[in-house]
Length: 176
Ligand SMILES: [Zn+2]
Ligand SMILES: [Zn+2]
Image 1 (tube, rainbow, N blue to C red):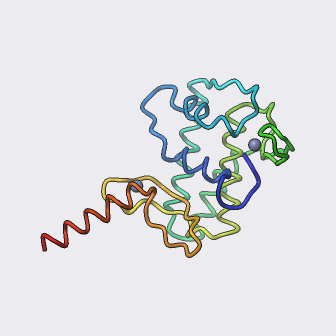
Image 2: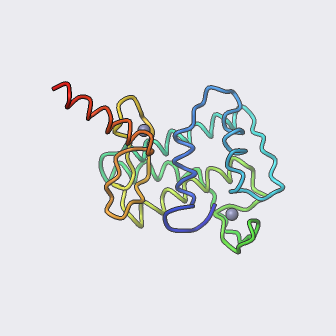
Protein backbone atom coordinates (compact mmCIF):
# COMPACT_ATOMS: atom_id res chain seq x y z
CA UNK A 1 0.00 0.00 0.00
CA UNK A 2 2.80 2.37 -0.70
CA UNK A 3 3.09 5.66 -2.48
CA UNK A 4 5.87 4.79 -4.82
CA UNK A 5 6.85 4.60 -8.45
CA UNK A 6 7.08 1.31 -10.32
CA UNK A 7 8.03 -1.92 -8.69
CA UNK A 8 6.93 -3.08 -5.30
CA UNK A 9 3.86 -0.92 -5.17
CA UNK A 10 0.12 -0.67 -5.12
CA UNK A 11 -0.33 -1.11 -8.86
CA UNK A 12 0.98 -4.67 -8.50
CA UNK A 13 -1.77 -5.33 -5.98
CA UNK A 14 -4.31 -4.01 -8.52
CA UNK A 15 -2.97 -6.23 -11.30
CA UNK A 16 -2.83 -9.29 -9.02
CA UNK A 17 -6.41 -8.65 -7.95
CA UNK A 18 -7.62 -8.40 -11.56
CA UNK A 19 -5.86 -11.68 -12.43
CA UNK A 20 -7.05 -13.66 -9.42
CA UNK A 21 -9.44 -16.58 -10.00
CA UNK A 22 -12.76 -16.30 -8.21
CA UNK A 23 -13.93 -19.90 -8.07
CA UNK A 24 -13.64 -20.28 -4.29
CA UNK A 25 -16.36 -18.47 -2.32
CA UNK A 26 -13.68 -16.93 -0.09
CA UNK A 27 -11.31 -16.02 -2.94
CA UNK A 28 -11.04 -12.36 -1.87
CA UNK A 29 -10.10 -13.14 1.74
CA UNK A 30 -7.54 -15.64 0.46
CA UNK A 31 -6.17 -13.04 -1.94
CA UNK A 32 -5.76 -10.57 0.93
CA UNK A 33 -4.10 -13.16 3.17
CA UNK A 34 -1.70 -13.89 0.31
CA UNK A 35 -0.83 -10.19 0.13
CA UNK A 36 -0.63 -9.53 3.86
CA UNK A 37 2.55 -7.48 3.45
CA UNK A 38 0.25 -4.60 2.43
CA UNK A 39 -1.52 -4.56 5.79
CA UNK A 40 -0.65 -4.00 9.41
CA UNK A 41 -0.13 -7.07 11.56
CA UNK A 42 -3.43 -6.71 13.41
CA UNK A 43 -5.60 -7.02 10.28
CA UNK A 44 -8.46 -9.53 10.39
CA UNK A 45 -8.64 -11.11 6.92
CA UNK A 46 -12.33 -11.89 6.68
CA UNK A 47 -14.89 -10.52 4.23
CA UNK A 48 -18.66 -11.00 4.02
CA UNK A 49 -20.16 -12.41 0.81
CA UNK A 50 -21.30 -8.86 -0.08
CA UNK A 51 -17.79 -7.49 0.45
CA UNK A 52 -16.36 -10.34 -1.61
CA UNK A 53 -18.74 -9.43 -4.44
CA UNK A 54 -17.60 -5.81 -4.27
CA UNK A 55 -13.95 -6.89 -4.35
CA UNK A 56 -14.89 -8.71 -7.59
CA UNK A 57 -16.38 -5.49 -9.00
CA UNK A 58 -13.16 -3.67 -8.15
CA UNK A 59 -11.18 -6.41 -9.91
CA UNK A 60 -13.44 -6.01 -12.98
CA UNK A 61 -12.85 -2.26 -13.01
CA UNK A 62 -9.07 -2.72 -12.86
CA UNK A 63 -9.34 -5.06 -15.80
CA UNK A 64 -11.58 -2.60 -17.66
CA UNK A 65 -8.95 0.12 -17.22
CA UNK A 66 -6.24 -2.18 -18.60
CA UNK A 67 -8.43 -3.09 -21.61
CA UNK A 68 -9.50 0.48 -22.41
CA UNK A 69 -8.62 1.64 -25.90
CA UNK A 70 -8.61 5.43 -25.57
CA UNK A 71 -7.69 8.09 -23.05
CA UNK A 72 -11.35 8.97 -22.53
CA UNK A 73 -12.22 5.35 -21.82
CA UNK A 74 -9.34 5.08 -19.38
CA UNK A 75 -10.45 8.22 -17.55
CA UNK A 76 -14.08 7.10 -17.34
CA UNK A 77 -13.10 3.69 -15.98
CA UNK A 78 -10.50 5.10 -13.60
CA UNK A 79 -13.09 7.52 -12.27
CA UNK A 80 -15.54 4.67 -11.70
CA UNK A 81 -12.81 2.93 -9.71
CA UNK A 82 -11.76 6.08 -7.84
CA UNK A 83 -15.40 6.73 -6.85
CA UNK A 84 -15.05 3.63 -4.63
CA UNK A 85 -11.82 4.81 -3.00
CA UNK A 86 -11.59 6.69 0.28
CA UNK A 87 -7.96 7.81 0.51
CA UNK A 88 -6.74 8.69 3.98
CA UNK A 89 -2.94 8.90 3.81
CA UNK A 90 -1.28 7.27 6.78
CA UNK A 91 2.36 7.02 7.85
CA UNK A 92 3.51 3.62 9.06
CA UNK A 93 6.63 1.55 9.69
CA UNK A 94 4.93 -1.87 9.95
CA UNK A 95 7.61 -3.42 7.70
CA UNK A 96 10.49 -1.66 9.42
CA UNK A 97 10.67 1.28 6.97
CA UNK A 98 8.78 4.53 7.36
CA UNK A 99 6.40 4.82 4.39
CA UNK A 100 2.93 6.03 3.46
CA UNK A 101 -0.24 4.07 2.91
CA UNK A 102 -3.28 5.30 0.97
CA UNK A 103 -5.69 4.00 3.61
CA UNK A 104 -5.75 3.91 7.39
CA UNK A 105 -5.20 0.52 9.06
CA UNK A 106 -8.45 0.92 11.05
CA UNK A 107 -10.55 1.35 7.88
CA UNK A 108 -12.64 -1.69 6.85
CA UNK A 109 -10.49 -4.24 5.01
CA UNK A 110 -12.43 -3.91 1.75
CA UNK A 111 -12.03 -0.13 1.88
CA UNK A 112 -8.28 -0.49 2.37
CA UNK A 113 -8.08 -2.86 -0.58
CA UNK A 114 -10.25 -0.77 -2.93
CA UNK A 115 -8.52 2.47 -2.01
CA UNK A 116 -5.02 1.06 -2.42
CA UNK A 117 -5.83 -0.55 -5.76
CA UNK A 118 -7.62 2.54 -7.15
CA UNK A 119 -4.90 4.96 -6.03
CA UNK A 120 -2.03 2.73 -7.12
CA UNK A 121 -3.46 2.19 -10.59
CA UNK A 122 -4.39 5.86 -11.10
CA UNK A 123 -0.98 7.00 -9.95
CA UNK A 124 0.81 4.85 -12.53
CA UNK A 125 -1.55 5.85 -15.35
CA UNK A 126 -1.16 9.55 -14.52
CA UNK A 127 2.62 9.37 -14.18
CA UNK A 128 3.56 6.86 -16.87
CA UNK A 129 0.63 6.75 -19.32
CA UNK A 130 -2.29 4.38 -19.82
CA UNK A 131 -0.44 2.51 -22.57
CA UNK A 132 1.58 0.94 -19.76
CA UNK A 133 -1.38 -1.32 -19.02
CA UNK A 134 -2.29 -4.19 -21.29
CA UNK A 135 -3.60 -7.70 -21.68
CA UNK A 136 -1.30 -10.68 -22.26
CA UNK A 137 -0.65 -11.56 -25.93
CA UNK A 138 -0.14 -15.28 -25.23
CA UNK A 139 -2.76 -17.57 -26.71
CA UNK A 140 -5.32 -18.61 -24.11
CA UNK A 141 -4.17 -16.09 -21.49
CA UNK A 142 -6.35 -13.14 -20.56
CA UNK A 143 -4.29 -11.78 -17.70
CA UNK A 144 -3.57 -8.06 -17.52
CA UNK A 145 -0.18 -6.53 -16.75
CA UNK A 146 1.53 -3.26 -16.02
CA UNK A 147 4.58 -2.66 -18.17
CA UNK A 148 7.45 -1.53 -15.96
CA UNK A 149 10.12 -2.06 -18.61
CA UNK A 150 12.26 0.93 -19.52
CA UNK A 151 11.23 1.01 -23.18
CA UNK A 152 7.58 -0.04 -22.65
CA UNK A 153 8.01 -3.19 -24.73
CA UNK A 154 6.13 -5.71 -22.63
CA UNK A 155 3.50 -7.93 -24.27
CA UNK A 156 3.02 -10.78 -21.82
CA UNK A 157 1.73 -11.09 -18.27
CA UNK A 158 4.65 -13.23 -17.14
CA UNK A 159 7.89 -14.88 -18.22
CA UNK A 160 5.97 -18.14 -18.42
CA UNK A 161 3.64 -16.74 -21.09
CA UNK A 162 6.51 -15.03 -22.92
CA UNK A 163 8.54 -18.23 -23.27
CA UNK A 164 5.44 -20.32 -24.04
CA UNK A 165 4.70 -17.95 -26.93
CA UNK A 166 8.30 -17.98 -28.16
CA UNK A 167 8.23 -21.78 -28.31
CA UNK A 168 4.84 -21.78 -30.08
CA UNK A 169 6.07 -19.25 -32.66
CA UNK A 170 9.20 -21.31 -33.26
CA UNK A 171 7.16 -24.49 -33.82
CA UNK A 172 4.77 -22.63 -36.15
CA UNK A 173 7.73 -21.37 -38.21
CA UNK A 174 9.23 -24.84 -38.46
CA UNK A 175 5.92 -26.29 -39.65
CA UNK A 176 5.65 -23.59 -42.31
ZN1 LIG B 1 3.18 -0.85 3.95
ZN1 LIG C 1 -0.19 -14.48 -19.87
